[in-house]
Length: 202
Image 1 (cartoon, rainbow, N blue to C red):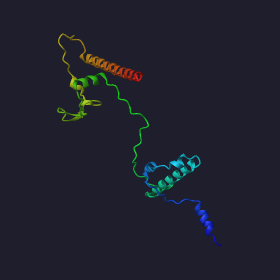
Image 2 (image 1 turned 180 degrees about the horizontal axis):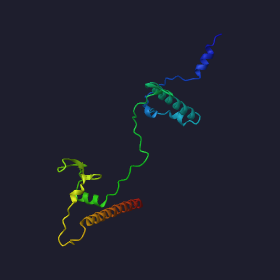
Image 3 (image 1 turned 60 degrees about the horizontal axis):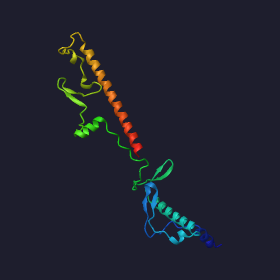
């Protein structure tokens, strides 16, 4: 029994995996993308009867070319099967979100910018000559504050000699902390106000 004709008819149902293009495609296999820069067939593309068939052919051929590139990649075995190792991405995609807006300058930042003052980062550790070692400049154990360092506080002139200087120092520190909190809140309020004003201007 000669089955040649049957095999040929069956083979004719499938297109070959080789696709010829005048201009080779550009690929970004990491994104599973191929970019076809060949010119369209204007007659087939504008024909109502041939347009859909033409688009299907283009899609099929370009997909086949992309699959061919994937099969050229090195592979590795995994629990889910044999996986291809994708190369690094070559296409830069646009951002999904817009660029973040610059934060409004605080009063100090505006003053420093106007005066040309530049912030210099201070080292966290500082050498204590009396103790002969490095200690934190601030924070927990900052400067390794020894309670004996302030065992004596000189009473200023014209001050009440019966006034507790330790309590006075503590109260002054608490007052400074409150002032700093108010300044921070004022900066936050001004920043929010400037952001709202900027939105309304748009």
